[in-house]
Image 1 (cartoon, rainbow, N blue to C red):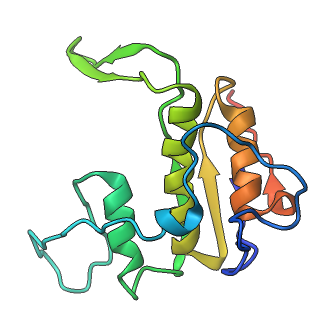
Image 2 (cartoon, helix red, strand yellow):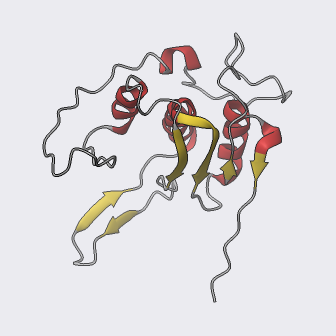
Image 3 (tube, one colour):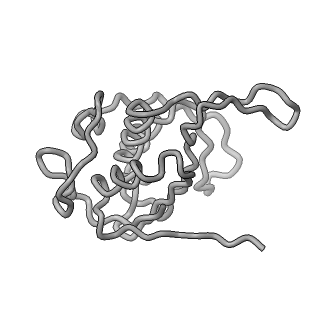
Length: 166
C-alpha cells in the first residue's frame, strides 16, 4: 500500500479524516490525540563519523523513537519517503539464516491493528506535504490496515503499487 499526505490538519475532533464516512472500530482503539502525546524516547548520540551525515541508526522501542523524532525540527514534517515492513500477523515464529530464533509474529486482531495504527499516526506527522508512505503487507491484514490508513491519511490519496518479478 502507498499513500501521499493530504495536509497536516487532516484530523478532526473525533480523530477520523472527514473524507470517509466509515471507520474501523475495535476494542482498545486509542484517540489520536493521546498517541501524539506518546512519551518520547531519550535518545543519546553514540558515534559521529562525519558531522555532515544525515543518516541515523536508532535502536529502541519504535513508538517512543517516532515520538522523539517528532520533537526534532530537522525531521518532523520533512520526511519524503517512509517504507515500513511490519509483522504480517501470521502467528508464526521465524528463524534466522543460521536457524536461530529471530522473532515471533504473534500479534493479531485488534492488538495488531492498534499497534500499527499508533505508529502510522506518528509517521504521518513525520512526512512532508509531498511525502509518501509504503506499507509492505500480505493478505493477512492488508484490508483492515487499508481502512486504518484511509482514516489517518485520507481515502482519496491511496495508490496501489504492484511489483512484477521476472
